[in-house]
Image (cartoon, rainbow, N blue to C red):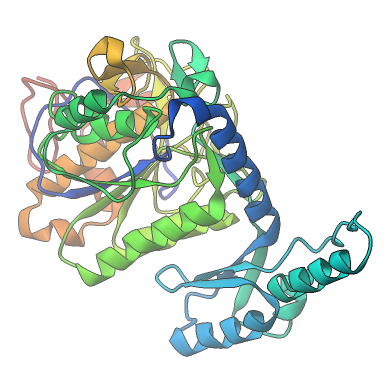
Length: 421
């Protein structure tokens, strides 16, 4: 969410241009399983994630909390937690300290059961309240239980979280999908096996389908085969991108996060705070608004401050029925029946149609890359607000909504990616 403004920007049309910016695209799927074990593997993955979410707490620290401050908080947590991860670039800590619920009784009898219980007690400290552990530390702004985040995309009329997410690609399809993205792609984890993340990346910078086909793409996986994941994992990934930006201050970096979760806290949710703090490090953060036909201010990271939150439009340049909306939405972009890369679709030669705000956000991320490319040596210094302003300047109107058209054959104006002639 940018600073308050009078309306919503609509980005419409196709894009075709090169960009020199780095775009970090969230690959929201996990590695390819063996065909016979897909369902069991997905179920085990979901169960492990549920346990992780139940036991993990995110600690939000003050922006002024330096390295010694973070060490002090970590030292307070360490004796009672099995894992403590400092996310120094966004001033947060992820702590796995138990659920706070009593452990279930062991039904076995005899000395073997007692020995097993004793071993478990050594491996897993008793559940504790993270809030109580950190009581009295003024640098701790909030402690929030971990939660689940989603990537809900409509594929051929069905949610990507269902059976469609369990398709297993053939190796030749993987290679074909990569060729569709181009050669300037780095996969940080195994290749996408559900199509969602590759589809998003293809909209940003695909060779034939991308807004900015010469952009450098780094694909980072944060969600599982069912299109869901732990918010703590998403936040840790955002921190890693913020770290890259700190180490490369003159290099333009864009995150596109086509994922979301319901949150009453909105902008104060740790996922939103992480996105905001990455933006303030200098990363241009683009997020999807979500697909629940609801107020985006109740979703994270869609409600984050200083990011570009994107809703979805139809072919008629109308807001998509399923798209979230409201004052926390900054822009809207094409999100209905978008053709892009699919790492799992053999029958379409590596391409597929999908709909949702997950498809809208990468259009804006690609357009942001074009704006940064035009900025030349100053690209790395542009903020998300400045990128937004350059995209929206001179926009036409579409009813109550400003309309920005960018596409092939466009006449470029100073400071703009392109304005329809």
